[in-house]
Amino acid sequence: MTPEALEQFSSSLDEAFYVIGGAILAIEFVKGLFTRSFRWRGYADMFASFSTQIPFLLMEIFVLTFAYAGYVAIAETYVSWRMPITIGTAALAVLVADFVYYWEHRFAHEWRSLWTQHAVHHSSRFMNISVAFRFGPLEGVTSAIFHLPMLFLGFAPELIFFAIIVVQAYQIWIHTELIGKLGPLDGVLNTPANHRVHHGCDAKYLDTNYGGILIIWDRLFGTYQQEEETPRYGLKRDFDSVHPLVVWFSELPRFFHDLKHARSFGEWWMYVFGPPGWAPNPANDGAPKPAATTAK
Image (cartoon, rainbow, N blue to C red; front, side):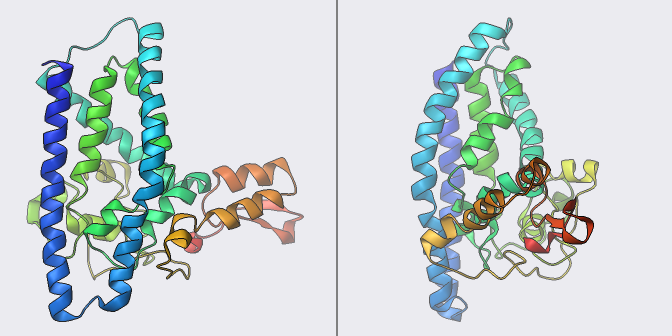
């Protein structure tokens, strides 16, 4: 398999998932019209979701251009061997990238600096295909950093970027309420039922089901939660805005405010790498303590 063939296959696979997502979105749209389940706020929220693609794609073009060039430079300078591009290595790259995505996604929930971007994806009170396109502007930067170790395993840059695209494209169709539980598949794959749980802000659903394609990573690392009752979607904190600019940058004002008012390097560090909602303990002379995840 040549790099060109890999790129063509990647584009075809990406388009296929977009077509599936578009079909589900059309059904959701028609259903919303007939049942009046969306009303104006639902459609405004869909517009806000799609609007996040403006800053995201602008950053993505910039990031991917330099990230790919950086990957190539690192591979040629520091990696003495490289896997051939074959169907087998492409499948292996997707498997490894899916494992990497699990940890990238988990850290995006556990480090506040990363949560400032990923919270955009979780800020909708609805669950439909439009949410699949709801991203923070800098999430592509996080992805490029987390997948960098794959270079040192011998994966060619083309394979890595192919795998990233596949893992992301797969997740388009799982952002919906139209598809119910899928039986045994729910135990292996990230399905709509599993991903609805991930978007829930109920206490038992918080910080679960991080997988991209496979849900087995969550089962292995103790973060799996099956869907029971229908989740309440969105952030646990009071956030219901559908204004595009507010959605794009919802977490940043408070984040920078807290950094500015940090009283020590320890506080600054925890504001950056501590969990969302972390705050100093005023009863212990500013000594840090973790806060509950309710700030999400």
